[in-house]
Image (cartoon, rainbow, N blue to C red; front, side, top):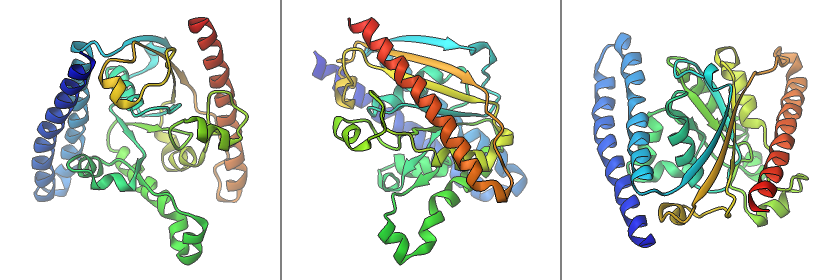
Amino acid sequence: MHVVKGILACLSITVATLAVCAVLFIWVIERFVVSAKRKQAVSQRMDRIIIWWTSANRWMIKRLNLVTPEITWHAREQLSPQHWYLVICNHQTWADILLLQTYLLDDIPPLKFFTKSQLIWLPFVGLAMYVLGFPYVKRVSREQIKKNPRLRNADKDNVMKACEGFKNHPTSILNFVEGTRHTAEKHQRSGGGFQHLLKPKPGGINYILDGMASDLNGLVDVTLVYPEGVPTFWHFLQGKCPRVIIDTQLRQLPEFAHSPEDETLRKTQIAQWVQGIWEEKDAFITDTLRRTTG
């Protein structure tokens, strides 16, 4: 039964992806031929693709009864799909993205998130994320930077370019602050002093705040907890993840130093702020697992 459910979930995601991509590529062609005045309206309309795709996945999750979410909201009444938000979350499995998109959909604008540059080669999906304005980032080693110093600012340039597009209409920018999915091996290497989290990497947040801090209406801080253990994406699609706890709170963005000569101070302030949030998140996960698993 679990395998059948997983196959049906995969088919549903595939059909939804092909359907919305067909519409998206028509709109991409339209954006190329319309006047400059209408390009912004077409770009804004293209975000419906994310809403349609997410709505289809939400219907699939509900119909197949894949998971029972236990959602706690803090200051939900202050959220609006007409505002701009930075969204952060701990990251453990590809299912995180489906859950975040599904259960935040009606309260904030559709999510756009940092995407590894390699994913652009995924059929349909990679190109769709590119034209929808998802920021593409790549991992660059110190050796590569030495050979080509221009790579040092490649990610920042991509994020700043994406931020300019985000200003045109309400957007939620998702950043997995840990930079990768949590695993036991990565946790052991991280050395961040957290029981359930990897050490946060605030560089992406720094880029976003640098690009559009004055446009953001707040920080949506989400914590995902899987009491029965973190599922693989395939296990999630099979319905083998009976419960997920989703804690969502709206935080105000502090005032950080912003002049060019204060760049080092600004980075330190942001790093300390993120570190504090991560310490709270780690304590929350510890307490939640103790209450829910005994």
